[in-house]
Image (tube, rainbow, N blue to C red; front, side, top):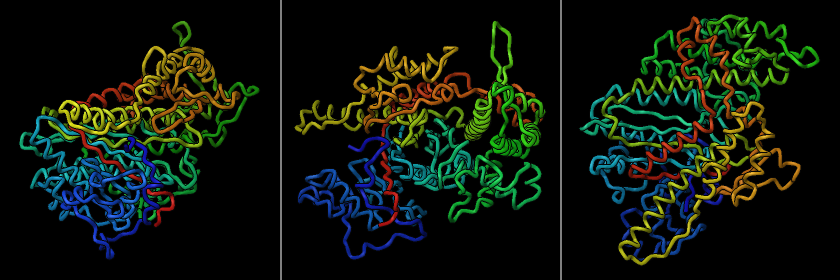
Length: 620
C-alpha cells in the first residue's frame, strides 16, 4: 500500500533531473507500453521492466517491481503511472511541456482507460463523475515535501478552468490569481523545493447547473509559523519578504514608503544567506503579486497596508534588547528605539505602544490587569511571538479576502474538492508543528485505508468474489492516543495550557504518567530525556517530539495587547486584521478542522494522486 503523505522515494527512482526547460523527449529506442494494451498485458502477465502504464497488470508485483516499473517510465519522461485509479506522479524537476492546450484537448471528454496516465485524466474523471453522479468529488494530493503536490494542484485547477467554459470568466481568473497570492505568502524555498507550500489547503471548486465554475472556497491548515523567524541553511523565509525587498531596492519610492533596507539588514531573512532563486526574478514576482491583489478586489490603500505589515514583521525581528535589574527586566537598546519608531509608523500606532508590547506582558489578577516586565530571554521570545501573530493574521486576512471575492453564493453545493496537504515529517528535531502535521497524516491514512481497502474488500465479500485478503496498517489505536479523550495527547496539552502555572515540564510529567502504558506511546531511550521529549509510533514509524515551547506554540501567544493597540490604528488594513485574533489553543482548533475535513472527504467520491520526490541528488 502507498501510505498517505510518505513514500519510500529513494527506492522508487534514483533521482530526478536538474530543472531545465524542454519538451517531452522520445523513448530513446524503448517502446513504452500503452494503456490500450491493458487486456493483453493482463492475459500475458506484464513485467516491471516493461514500464507499464498501469501497475495492476503486472502479474507478480512487489515493492521492488513497483520501483523498477516507475524508474523505467521515469527515465523516458513518463512521470505518470496508474495503480488502478490511483495516479502515481514522480517529480521530473524540469518542464516537460505536457500541460498545454493540446494536452487539455487530448484529455477532455476521455475516460481514464482511453488515454495515457496524466493528472489531466484524473481531473477529467472527477469532472465527469460530478456531471454524471449525485456525489461531489474529492482529489487528495499526497506526498512528501518536494514531491510536487502544489504543482499537481495547480494543474488540476488549470484543467478545470480550461474545460468548464468556452469563454473567459472573471471568477476563473480570480481563482488563478488567488494562487499567486497564496504562493507569495505561504510558499518558501526549502532544501528540497524552491516553491514548497508551507501550509495545507482544501480548495472547493464550485459549479453552477451548467457545470461551469462559479466560484471557490479555500480552507487553509496550519501555516508553518517557525519559518517566519528561522530558516535553515539554503532555505528562505516566505517569498513575499524577498519580493518586497527586491522591488524596494529597485524603486526608491517603494523603499521610502515601506521603510525598507537591503536583504542583509533583516534578521528574519538573512540567516541562511540565501536571497534569490535560480531562474526567478523577485521584482517581476512582486509586480505579479500586486496585479493579483487588484484582480482580487484589494484596493491600493489596503494593499499598501498589507506590505506595511510585512515590513513591520521584518523590523520586529531586529529588536535586540538588553537586561536590567539583575536580569529581572529588559529594555530596548538605543538602536531598538529607532526600530520601534519604524514599526509604529508602519502599523499606524504610537512608538511608546510598540515599546510597551515589546518589553512588558499583561496578566489578569483578581479582575485587574497588571503589567509585568519581561526578562531578557522572555523579551526576545516575545519579539518572535509578535512577528508570528502579525504575519499569520495577515495570511488569514488574505484567505478570507479570496473567499469573499470568489464566493459562489448559493451555488456551493456542487463541487470538486482538491486537498493539497503536508506530508509526514520526521527530522532530527521534531516539535509541535511536526505533531500537527503527522496527526493530519494519521487522519488521512485512516481515510485512505477505509476507501481503498476496507470498502473495496467489503464489496468483494458481499458479492462472494474470491480474493486474497490484503493486510494493511490499521492506525485507529494511534489516532486514539492523539485525539480520543479523556486520556490523549490533545486533551492533556489543552488542559495544561489552561492551567495558570502550566509549563512544558509539568505537561510531559503528567502525560508520561497517564500514557506510558499505551502501545503507541514512546518514552525516550535515555531516561534523562524523559522530561524533554516523548514519542508516537505512527503508521510510518516512530517519531520523537521535543516539548520545548510546546505550551507557548499551542497557546499561539495571542498578543492581545498588540492587537488592542492595532484596533485603533490609522491604517485601515492593520485595523481590519485584528478581527483574526485567535482565542483558542491552536491544536484544539486544528483537531476540529481535521474532523470537519474528514467529514467532507467521507461524503464524496474520492480519487488519489500520490506524488513522489526523487532523492536529494536530483540527477540520474
